[in-house]
Length: 201
Image (cartoon, rainbow, N blue to C red; front, side, top):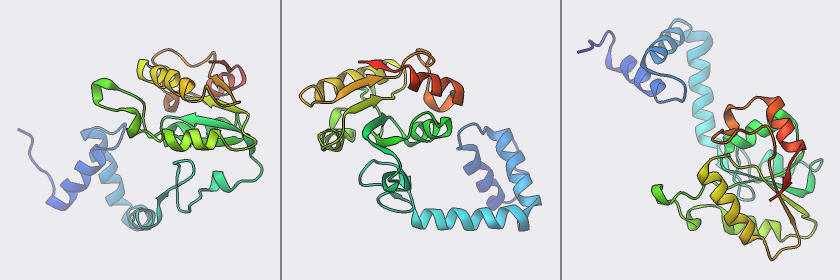
């Protein structure tokens, strides 16, 4: 059985770091040790930044993005094309598309995808707000930038049916996104190609 090598406060730090994506127990121990060694230049500023973020982060009531203001920075950006609405599963997908610089439009975060096995039904997703936004004057296209998984494609079909009565073009990402792939793990070039080569759904 593994022995604890530090006090409960440090062990708690390690356990919390190990819950982060991409960090296992060993990586979490290395990260914790690095933070402890750089307490003045890294641990204290990180602690302050996390406290402030926790106090100020809100979910945008318009698109579902996370920011420190509502509406969020993207929704307030008047340089974006208001006629295009990009639908994503999660905020991480929104950030991935923004890193690619492939599209300068408005976004809509669903907060997940339909998944009967996991008990995720339409009422659990941000779908009513999507229909309302797609109905707004000036919106001409809805891009379904959902992950190429079974649940992602099921959700895309469901949304297509939801929006069928509206005078908007519904498109999906094209080449570049592999079946079973997730947007957050793709490189910027692949995402750019997928946006440029989108097709009707």
